[in-house]
Image (cartoon, rainbow, N blue to C red; front, side, top):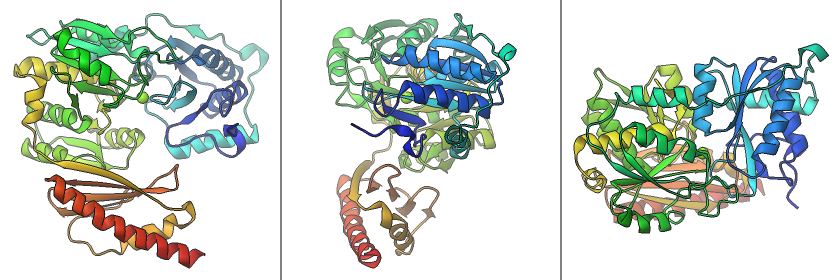
Length: 463
Ligand code: MG
């Protein structure tokens, strides 16, 4: 059996995640909710869950835990993560709790805790909840201050209205969209968004089922093979596929070909800059393709890089009042709506771009600058990661260097390498981008051997 989550720490890189009833038990959920409610001083909070099998059970426990420490809970029931984040922000809640394991396999569930902007808490804030949890220092409410959770039914109206308003209403040309909802909660929102934009919808994997019978919830090319194949026969202008909780959206063109998140985000960046004035900041993790910077610069924008992870993008956007952010995994953030990634507004953005440009998605993507990204990983014990990073920092540099998360070195304006220690596995991740595949592979091989030597040396030093 896998060890329970509450041995030592709860929060990982994606909130709390674990296999249900092995690592993540009902007892943990209840106590975690009590600790979270105590952290928020018994304030008003939203709670909701995605379509996973254990979702309703865990939601009852979370509502009970929050209420027991004096929170007024607004129970949103089944909902997408971005809709919960949007409502947490617009209803001016102090925080929110979303029960989801996002794109993980069916046996997992988890929790994401949001703050008052609807943005996930930063790691230091999560650690304070963890402290309350392990010290059992929750503050139970007086008997007459335990508030009955409110059941919310009209939960998507304001969310839909915000998306439509931020898109400037209905685009002229009507499109047909194939929505692959991954048997997840995005079926509650994305088909309606497309209809409100004036389009027509076909849905696959549209019944909410936490066993994910249609496909696994991570929208990878492999998991979307079936949807890709049926897309041409559906005569859709494009396809969109979400992860389990609907915060990510990846796209298929009219032929059913998979579009990489960097590519669709580049189209969104161009469209955004064409529709705005002044120098706008585009926020993206350092792992994103150089294409984003190329497009941003060409259309008068400026890229701001963050560490890898949506919470970094959200917080930099809030701090700089930057309107647009995006990740290579299909996460797009639009501050005037909510500073969190939202698969729903991403669909609306791509819909508008295709509708207004009157060009198919395949052509829009084909016109983007060409580049190749190669990913690799190298085994490295956790104990030597810090000294390996130190040695990498001392490697000869030729161009710009950024060390906000691992180390990113540019060799030319279009080629770079990012070397990062994994936070969860005993490996280093290498990411290289170059204008040609040959060049990208040469850089990868060169640095793989450099890194292997450094790791070997460090091990000898420590050993
Ligand atoms: Mg997700």
